View 1 (tube, rainbow, N blue to C red):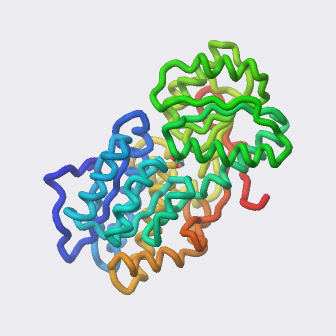
View 2: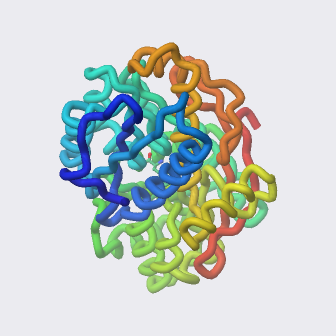
View 3: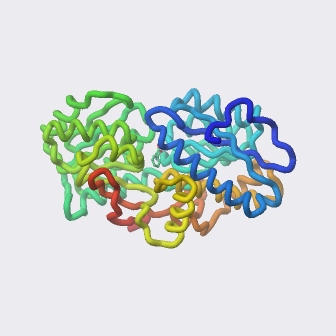
Length: 369
Ligand code: PHE
């Protein structure tokens, strides 16, 4: 079940491997945790159907952190101390991964974030990994796209940043650096707090600064509300964001208010490669919906963990972590994954364009391009 709370958790028997997931199953980023959990469960079902990991069945315990850093900390403390999980998967939001990573590091339990892109997450220590690219890359991808895309060709950008999210603050800095390095100017920098309802003051200042693009490195609920209010104010400038936009809810909130707006992401469901299309078929068969990037990253994170467990000399944290560090050329749904010396994969990003509430594939940008 999605939430194995309290009663279901127990110390692992020797014929199974228990792994933990902490995620936002409820709250304003709920689709992040739900999609990730679905991706993880699909990977578990697959590995168990094939006999498990070296003959042991994998069992998942998921806790809802409600998108709250304190809840994330206590969920992970519970996973490592009471449930004694072999490894931890999570979180999506960088701020929540940062809250929990020190607990995994201190307890010697490997943690893989499927999707936290802030560089600081894996800097916590040698127990902490991720399967996504990081924000210095994502910020430069967005800046390059804003400068060079035929429909944007921006020299002047405004930024609207969620000052409460380490992800948003970090990605804003990376975009700003790269946009200026590419010859552009930042004409306005505005801030909001996650959950704000009224963005009219910030959007009015932005409008007065006459930008050619507005960079909004936020999460989907806020971005959807921002887009609706920007439309009401008559702002026609294209908006651009990062992976935090990745949710079916974004289009449901904003509809055509985001037409002509773009975001960078880890995956497109329109990628014709068999690797992606086979995953989509499996996922749709189980959940009757098209997977988003979070689902794909959750699936990849779980599969990389199982692969490391299979080759590790033991299921001790140090042994699994040492195998994770060696990951090279792993064929993930979200691209080929190789860990660098800092436990960060180097892989391409895609740019998606919102059309009547649906993200459509535009381009792939590889590192170093
Ligand atoms: N990268 C975001 C963060 O670090 C989380 C995210 C990843 C959101 C992928 C959506 C899709 O906070």
